[in-house]
Length: 367
Image (cartoon, rainbow, N blue to C red; front, side, top):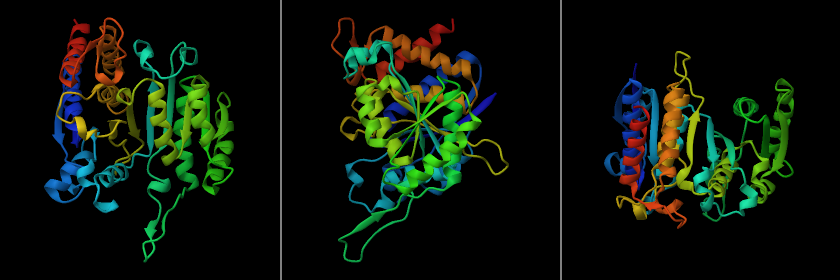
């Protein structure tokens, strides 16, 4: 079987980590005897510099024609003075909308080997952490009406959701909970926001379809507190675009480092009704201050490869092999700076060496 992967290196450390992830993909393809071809699609600041826009039509078309899209990171201070619609981040919103992916899966998993990197008391994370944030991706305040007054002294951004947008996201949340610990917490701000009240009403109406799922609700401010007070109470969190953006970053630090968290954006369809390509990316930013310096942790991008194999290519064995390789290199003591805790036996390495260790672990496990 042959698959086409669109790579979007982007800006900052994006090219550094995508290069490692591609090497991991090639290694697992060799081990499990499937073929890959790659097409690069410029996006973000790099595309602005070359084409004058954050997401050229040719890049979006290449992504739509692929089996899956692997993204690094976009943005940086070089482009901070551009108008909102012209910034690199506009390309990120546009590719999500262009692919039609509406559900962002952000697993916050604490590897036992990295317990020392968790900022919480050991008693709060004893036994490990495994939280899944299911974030709505193409609606809400990031896509709502926005503007500024003529005098520039006021501005607005609109949070707007339809029942259909909420239902399709919550369906992903319920289904995910059914495959895990049967607990779904819908996070909103229903005491203040009308849009959140619609989220809560919709979830309650859908609940009886999943009688085995324990459905609960929590205001977003309380959820942010509970993630650091008692994170193990959560299994699956389903929430809106902006709330999910914030809470998943918080969850990443609870589990040790934002450099370890992958994400999958799914739900799109092709014109003929077939499942469309998913978008896979680490949740960290572009970190331009360390770009090209062999300092970035590539493991979040490598773990995004595992999600790509699982959700888009339907290659579960290959996905588990990538995850096992990451665990193996952590067992061996390999650490990038963001996950190093100073414990005896740790080997501080850069981006390239960490990638080489992962590729070696994938290959050796197949012998």
